[in-house]
Image (tube, rainbow, N blue to C red):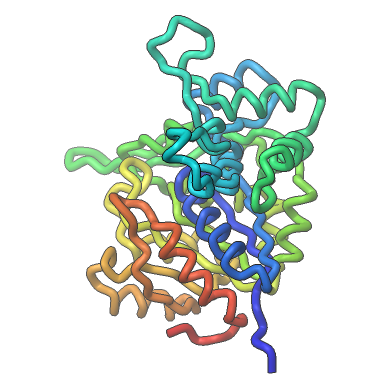
Length: 340
């Protein structure tokens, strides 16, 4: 009997966490052409800082930064493939071009902007929708998948932040904006988006419904992993989908929004935020979790299986090559399987 394989992956989030996942999936795609792996990124559109924040304020567009990073992660790496690199010297790849940031030191309106953000803004300003613009640039770059926004309009994150003081009752304050939430020194008690029901991205919903595996994380928890699922249309599609749902646990807490978080807190937070969405599998690095037995007990109590794998790269990031090996395993699994 042929082994049932998962061929369609949908990954959620933004920033460096999503980039690591997409790079790993791209490795799987090229390593297993017989599986016809399809990759879709559903990316948050709440960034309000840096180049993205400036462009978002100046043009009627979704913030391009996280979308650009997803495109870059799926773009062909010409530099690795070129055998004549030594002869020709260092070559700029499409990823290098998309990620190039103009120095803040220059006296220009371009100071601090990222080239890929400018490209997307130019396409969208030419009359194309967010999805059309991403498709156009993706085709020009010949990327290994599809990049979609979680909604067709920008969203704003709002969070209730709690502070505790020895001499006073707990103080709770509403903080608005991705940068403000990410840099808080309090504890996030709840998170919401504005508008509460942003314009649906039909292509994202279709990708979810056709998927074999849904992947959440790694990444900044309340400002990257969680926000796409706060979009009602995305939430409904994920919560009703019968497909395999996988959570990648962060290697370290995000300073600010999850300061003091332990690995188990991500599981508890998910169950509190999204009780209607049952996770099937949690991927965790045993070297980043001191009490593996407690973590596995909590996961199993919430109906999740744990797949222990060493996936850490340099610093606090996931290594795409190691992560690709994990996805090799996931591709051979069916929902309801016990992972060892």
